Amino acid sequence: MSQQGTIKRYYLIIEKVKGKTFPSFLEIKECLSQEGFQISDRTVQRDFEQIRLEFGVEISYNRLKNGYYIDSEKSINVESFIRFLELVNTANIITESLHDSKKTLEYISFDGEGGLVGIENLKPLLKAVRENIVVAFDHFSFQKNSTKHYQIQPYLLKEYQNRWYVFGIVEGLGDFRTFGIDRIENLMLTAEKFVRDDGLNPLEKFKNTIGLVYSNSTIQRVVLSFTPQQGKYIQTLPLHTSQQVLIDNDKETRISIDVIPNYELTQHILKHGDRVKVIEPEWLVDEIKEILHTNLKQY
Image (cartoon, rainbow, N blue to C red; front, top):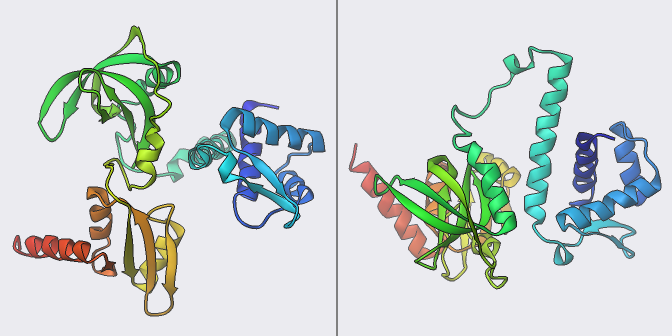
């Protein structure tokens, strides 16, 4: 079995068990069979084991539900793993279509040009993160409109809006910073190794935020009311993993998210225009009002 085939099996298994349906072992096998995978019970069990060993995602059996599920308490990076499988599966689908017809790319439009600027930095940075290697590079800042040299201890690679970022401790400063790899030049893996601080969990810093701007502020409950039509999009593409639907009728779709408010949350709200209204917290209502009033003065 090719590596692509194995990854596709992992994807199908995760898709089947990630919800709250608790599929049986037979249902999982039938799902695989429908996609052309005629495999033994032992192979499916081995897939469960490899998903746990290689990716830290625990697939467990619930006796009360008589089915399988992803045990979030025993798993790490579940969302990252699912995102990885989605990307690989999408690439495989396109690759298979190209084998069928060379004209496939004539019927596909990708999101924007230059979306993968700096992608050549991804592989060496991933090596540095995995092997605890200090890296040095020049980074251009949009805010300061200047380039500065940095040396960092890389802890995490993060994707956001079709861009990749490296997150690490800046040597000499001791604090975490985020750098867009599309603005990195002269990247070098130094001969210096660092000892990763297990008490620092960079994933936790982003867990309660939207986007790239994190802080140690308090998590707040944000309630937003969308038009019924826009609400359909919000339910299929949640703003945050904590999103819950409070009201869903022919007048509104009201949701709540538990996040640390930041710039990107404000931007997400504003981009929905008159199809969204902030209900709480009150200070965020006032902030959005002020931004909208300022915008009107420009016209």
